[in-house]
Amino acid sequence: MDAVNSDASKLWSDACSVIRAKIPERVFAQWFEGIIPIRMDKKKIILGVSDDYFEQWLGLNYSDVIADGLLEAAGKPIKFELEPGHQAEIAAIRAESASEPEAEAAPAPCFEEEDLQKEENAAADPGCAPNCLASYTFDNFIVGEENRYAYSAALTAAQEPGKFNPLYIYGSTGMGKTHLLQAVANFVHRRNPKAIVRYITCEAFLNSYLDSLRTHSTFKSHFEFRNHFREVDVLLVDDVHQLGGKDQIQEEFFNTFNTLYNAGKQIILTSDKQPSEIRGLEGRLVSRFESGVTTQITSPTTFETRLSILQYEQKDQLIKLPPDVIHYVAERISSSIRTLKGALMRLVAYSSMLGRAVPMAEAEGILSDMLDKEAETRKVTVDRIQQVVAEQFQLRVSDLTGNKRPKNIAEPRMMAMYFAREMTELSLMDIGNAFGGRNHATVLHAVAQVKKLSESSDDFRRNLSTLKRKIQG
Ligand code: ADP
Ligand code: MG
Image (cartoon, rainbow, N blue to C red; front, side, top):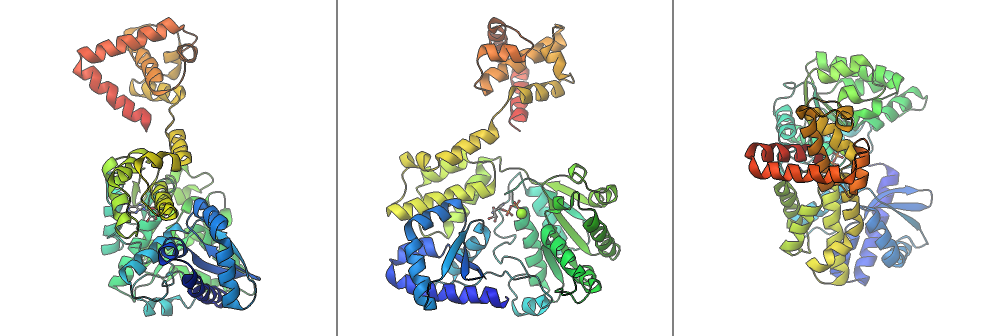
């Protein structure tokens, strides 16, 4: 940890001792253990919190307590700023402090500036790999249909480095990519603390690279930068979609990749899309990235996965929510695991504020904006319905909206209209318009026909539900 970060840690730890003496322990545990010192910035301390909600709530309710705590600890007024987006580190610290109830202060996260002292630091801490969170392990990664393959590929890469090379994991934000990547780092590190495991975000790689070109760099030379990333046993690079459009760094990355690949060293990459979909990524990198094992993590589609994640999270939380509320969250929030945890965190925070568990009747109101966003991400459009139906029956969308009436077109068209009626809020007239200006009676007729067919034919009904799932994505 550098001097600035350790200043922040010391100051915050002193301020916490002051604060702790002034407020009930339960409130301290719920709110202040959820704050971590990030850095000193001129005369200000930056404190990390999980999300915007926490930031606002703390700002409104406890800013004076924080300011007083800092004042007493430092002997002079110190400004502070709450910085959301540190949920993962906070979760890690809470998990650790829950398992060590005697610990006086919350342990610092295993998070340090990337520098050349890393190996020494790493050796001193058998628990987690440099730059990684100790709590990101395979053990606390909940496996479901959505991430099973990614999980086992990552585990294999950790157990037998070089076997799946490169391993490329993609999926949208909040799906657990970083968690898996750091789980590999921690696994390899714990098994063999001498192994050089480097986890880095693509952005940090880019910054280090630019830094290495400067005269007063962390690295004594550009050559040293190169070795830093090329003399490793396992290289884990998070969010490689950020390479897109950055030609100079792509060249550097390509060479790093080849050196490691040729030496049989394990490389794992994550991204929000498949290699071929990353705009501005050189063809040679696309083909390198695709040359090993590529696996996707999708949103937590099954209720069981979402429920297990919530139950797992609750294990270490001081405030337990009623089971029906947990079920409600698992049922309603499915866009990402990060959002799911955010919803849980909010309900726990509310319970703490109210001094009692949030009952079912209030949960919906508390989560209303999150539920709206969920509905938005799940919103089905007529365009989507037409695309999916056309694709399924190997037609063009224009066949569905056109005038031709052969059976191979008429039936899919009726199905598409039926879905538009069932899955969107559009009026019969709007649906008719979206299907080439048909009138509302035609739409009603189509809906009735589809219902009739699904009652009389099991096959038809099965096809209908398969299609519906595809439309829902
Ligand atoms: P990504 O890198 O895909 O954006 P993260 O790895 O940062 O997502 O995950 C977001 C949060 O969700 C983290 O707190 C992480 O621990 C948690 N998480 C994601 N997937 C799982 C899982 N399968 N089991 C438990 N926690 C998970
Ligand atoms: Mg990530």
